[in-house]
Image: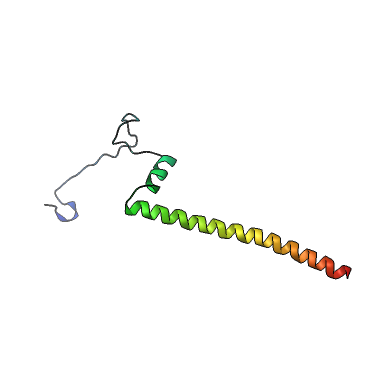
Length: 88
């Protein structure tokens, strides 16, 4: 039974910063890029969310690339058209 506001009870938890188990230990979580890749291939709601986030990031990068390349192409076409109009 838990008393409200922790009156008359005490609890302590210890948070470990380092995992001291060997690298090949089955319970040890992967870190860094390996953890992100393992999450992408996981068949759970968390894996679904990671795949959707990756898809959205890819779409934003493609749109940004299209805007940058499109502006360069449009500028080149306008410069060419202006040069042709002046020469004519």
